Amino acid sequence: MPDDKEETGGRRAGSYFIRDIVLADIAAGKNGGAVRTRFPPEPNGYAHIGHLKALYVDFGLAEEFGGLCNLRFDDTNPEGESIEFAEAIIDDIRWLGFDWGDRLFYASDYFELFYEFAQDLIRDGKAYICDLSMEETRKYRGTLTEPGINSPWRDRSVEENLELFAKMRAGEFAEGERVLRAKINMASGNINMRDPVIYRIRREEHYRSGNSWCIYPMYDYQHPLSDAIEGITHSCCSLEYVDHNELYRWFIDNVRWQRASLQPDDPIIPSQYEFSRLNITYTLMSKRKLKRLVTEGYVTGWDDPRMPTIRGLRRRGYTPAALRDFVARAGVARGPTLVDVALLEHCIREELNRSAVRAMAVLRPLKIVITNYPAGEMEWVSLENSPEDPAAGERLVPFGRELFIEQEDFMEVPAKGFHRLSPGGEIRLKGAYIIRCDEVRKNAAGEITELLCSYDPETKTGGANAGRKVRGTSHWVEASHSVVATVRLYDKLFKVADPEEGADEGVEVVEHLHPESLITLTDCRVEPMLGEAQGEERFQFLRQGYFYVDHVDYLQGKLVFNRIVGLRDTWAREQNR
Image 1 (cartoon, rainbow, N blue to C red):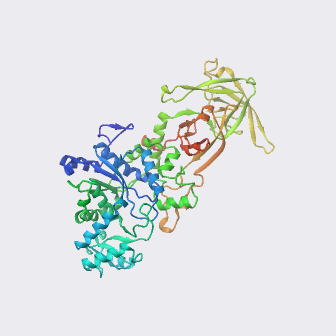
Image 2: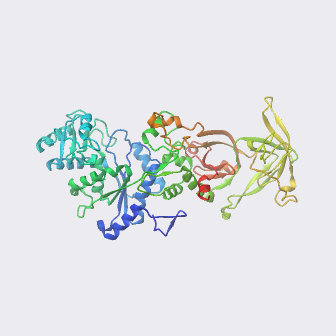
């Protein structure tokens, strides 16, 4: 992340409160001026767009200030975690362009240390084994207005606690029978400080450690200790953990973690800072609910281009640069924020407007026969590859007697304001001639099958009538050289801005699914050069939007174009009002 006066991706990089904190810490010489951050995903699902802000903050701060950012999996809850998710997250972060060097860590590698730290807490009289049930624990915890009640097991001796903790590890108790709790303050105004559970019994295989453990540390316990072990200076997390900051500090101050620090000679004291989550309209961020969409078949998988996962966005055709630009514009704030999805669409549209080659593709073909064009002849017309980039040059496109235009570009009984082809009417074919519709042919069912047209040979560039004006221009492809392709037209997955709308009244998110979020067209006709397109290439289809050659289908020998976004830019229009 560059200085305030520098530019990145065409956008000015602004300051924000965590960055200001880092600047102040460096100026004060805190932690020797070091900047060490970490991105700590849980491998219980695929990374999604909501993680972008944390990636931007964690890796961006380290990059700007010459520091280091670790990638660490907080994998201490065996339920739902898998190597599949971990590997996918690694691949997605690499694709986004973030680099952690050789600093890939797993909290599960610290299991033995966490256990030893817990034993130290017990010896110091700061942790105890509790026999209360989960329901009893909640009852004893108190409320926001009433203090909690001490557990009847709070004053067990150090020796008994150590013995019971060892038996917990050895698997001598059932799940839920006992837990290890920190001994802090049951009267604290912060409920998180009321003797929180730090170890529980879970008889579930861990994807890395197998069945070596049957007790697992809680997130609030392991997270600050992992930060401390790795020498993290600025531990940035989402706003939901603001009330946990006091507990984070308690573990840092009370656990003897320094003996296991990766910087034992001068251990760094980490601090936690919270920022708001990235919430986007028409977008679901809950991993659990996204998983339901996958498992119940509402989408084709985690990489479905309608999904907000990084894999889905990649398969839709979004670029790392556009995604970074989006999160930079969305900003990093303390308070809750909701970003219009139109901003995300604007970022990719702005990038591709500069870089994408233009092409002609007819998605719903209507055949045209130019009756006065010489049979068997073919000519090649020149079209620019990008009006935004003269250096992109031009390409040659075949023109002949039989063509395809869009069905929507013809209307047998034209409505008011319709300026394309109709019986007796004229349009210009992009880069070529003006044609007139002379006859409409239909099948026995009354459906239009083709149009018989005539062309004015003097209306091509350089011809005597080249300047003749008609009100409509249509894109087209020549029939014999056209390539058949599949095109997927994607729209928002949800039809309401807040997919959680009505949840309090029992409304399920699946009830808000957009029934036309995907339309698949299998008989599209595209110009010849698109038939040679490679996986991951992006194009602007004239009048249709921006499209991406699906890299997954490409590897399977299929030519499929995914619509990334349409041409209409609602965000930019609103900004210019």
